Image (cartoon, rainbow, N blue to C red; front, side, top):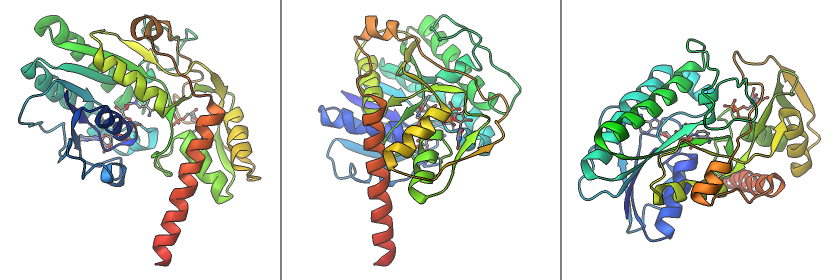
Length: 318
Ligand code: NAD
Ligand code: UDP
């Protein structure tokens, strides 16, 4: 297959590009590095099956040649990133999604939309099944992301219904792993960086809010299975093992053997109180379920953060 990956330079996108290449697919990666580092895909640049195109996909997408699938991942994903780039987040979720859908429709290609558990907002129903419509504040600070993704889902379904585009939607729940930016502001990367730097871990609110964290390798297996299927979705992809933010802080301290301690900060506006996916649909329709326990995934992630720190201080010394 020849697969276009928008946002392929990012955390999830770079792992997806790598997985596609390693099973023999060719990859065209589109990115503008607005929320990522070129280093994520530097090791792929010499691969004969890999093409990188620097592009803002909200402006337009031009990829010559045959295309079998389009995986649309381009979008800021961390709350500080989308708060910093509200208009760009709405643009890539709307115009960017339309450009990516048009490309897929023109080529009769499979289209994968990387949607999010944020479409459920601060959920009144717990845990979340795909048939729950969510509880989103349409005018709050998170709405630029949540509503852009909800619009992207609606647009993708409209392409499916009116143009028979082979659309598949996945709703991704919090995913972590190597290549997260240490300063991206997401909770796992922030806690690991703080623990390794000997700084107190910043817990927002009282830490009783929950999330369900999925390791990146599991998520990429799910994305590949969805690309290979003709399942329309939306399907939840995530690890149903739910933890409080306080529990996560303790686990990170344990894994890093840190004695940093914690510090409490105000809870951001509209911060969801709980999140846990029901994944029976993904299990039945894709045969997918996560396999990596959080303790193992965190160990891998901490190992990556540590070696990154060592590499950076070696470079600085040289
Ligand atoms: P990320 O910020 O690491 O990656 C997003 C990539 O998209 C970056 O490389 C960024 O530069 C690129 N990008 C943003 N706007 C662009 C534009 N207009 N044109 C071209 N490239 C652009 O985030 P991620 O965690 O890898 O998330 C990838 C996708 O998965 C996003 O769509 C996100 O909404 C979705 N998602 C991720 C998670 C998660 O926990 N990681 C959870 C739910 C949904
Ligand atoms: N969070 C926290 N400290 C941080 C960063 C985040 O306590 O330094 C909390 C945040 O308020 C939220 C949870 O951790 O309740 C997950 O935040 P993240 O930004 O990773 O993901 P999202 O809110 O998008 O699920």
